[in-house]
Length: 194
Image (cartoon, rainbow, N blue to C red; front, side):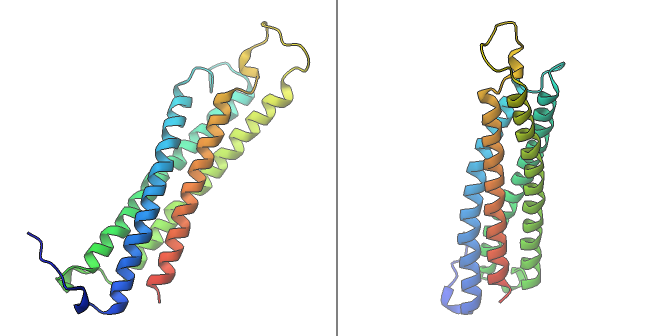
């Protein structure tokens, strides 16, 4: 059975840091998790769909395939960023432990926050590169599609499809989740570093 700790025996600054880490880490973790799961489902669907990134498709579809690759890399980085947000909550629990020898130091806590910040920044960069490729390929499709009456003889992969827009939405969700992680890490870095 865990030993209950009297919070009043801890210094007020340590209590504030622990509560901030737990609260901001929890909000960041759940937002990143929800947005990441949505993005993952959409990107997996798009990756295994026959209409996006099909062999022998036009250059625009190749851009979509490359964009999906970078978007998936951004989602993987998002998973690592969500782990760091979860780690913030674990650090808060360790700071409130009865055994002061097991508490992480301020430098260790700042190092974890710094790593979480770096992971989310790299993930956001990957997602933005993916967004450029995806939007560029959709733009190329829209410019290259014939104007006027549609015929059934035209290859349907030449047209902007709803799945293309789902991929844009998934990438936007990933970028938003990385933004949440960056904002949380910066906020925590500022609070812990006082």
